[in-house]
Image (cartoon, rainbow, N blue to C red):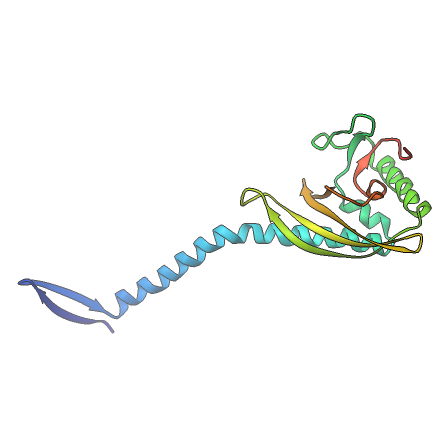
Length: 184
């Protein structure tokens, strides 16, 4: 129930409504603050979680040697190893079957190198402009009985995983680059 209070300032009568009207302003203000903060952070939060799911699916599939699942996570694009020209936007000219066969051939290269991804960790999310972001990944790899720790960056491009800026010398055997000479 609202109360009406008469207040007199400088010989001017003011009427204040206490209760229902003021009480309605508080929820509206809270809703506005919540909506505004969701607009600032919420959109990227959802996209970050989608990216993390794709990243985790990919790296776990590599660990589990489930290479078809790993393949499905990757953004596939043609790459010229001589000129280092990447066709990120155009993608690959290979059919789905050819691309999968090429990826599995690349995986054979990992096995020839006695390469085994043992573990991974998403260590950071980096923002460029408040909207564009990528994840920093730490890898634990065993190769020929020796343990290594490598770092790389994972980005989502057109809903698929794009691996970039890496120090793992064997990443070419498990990334989305297609249609190039595998053995240098």
